[in-house]
Amino acid sequence: MSVKNNTENIYEDLKEKIMNLEYKPGQTITEQEISNIYGVSRTPSRDILNKLSSTGLIESVPFKSSYVSLLDMDIIKQSIYMRIVLEKQIIKDAVRLIDDKFIADMEYNLKLQELLLKREFETKEFYDLDCQLHKLWYELTKNIFIWEQIEKAQIHYKRFKMLDILEVKNFKAIYEDHKMLVEVIKEKNTDKIEEIISEHLFSGINRLQNLIHGEFENYFNKR
Image (cartoon, rainbow, N blue to C red):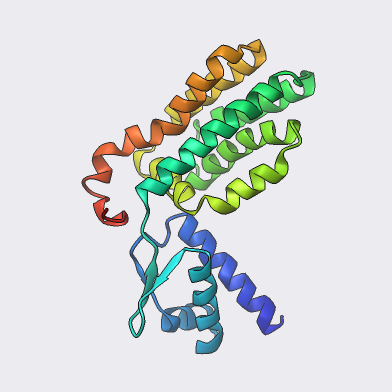
């Protein structure tokens, strides 16, 4: 494996660990640590940190160590607002296009969520199914580019959502939200879409409210 490919693999692995909160917001991460863990020299370690910094996942203090970027509640709220504005229209467009296969795809995803809740599972398994359900609406309406751009832009929101899933562990509530959304889509009840999608996307803030100002206060930027 070339140095370039190895560096890219390490970058992707660290990025995934940051997004999955294996590295917590505010946690220090150094060139030496990367060198020790992945068995590379300081130069590629520095390049990896610089790339993580350019994507907003790492904050670097000159002549000091680097740390995982803190969550920004203002950006998180704006991200949720963006998702609501986009997703309510995406779903309304999807309602006009639904067929038996699409309904089966949504119900299959729900069934996988239901089965997951009946056994031991990794948090990321549930998070991935959650994302896959939402992605179905973008695929049906041929707006996958928009989905991809949302995914790239959601550095703060995706980690916040993972914090919600990982710490609150109220998987049943999220699953019930998804069931309600699927029923509304199947019924083509466009009048209820905005209300339900708004409540669904904002529900994480409600679930984490006490922790945001308590146990996880240091995960967030002070404004």
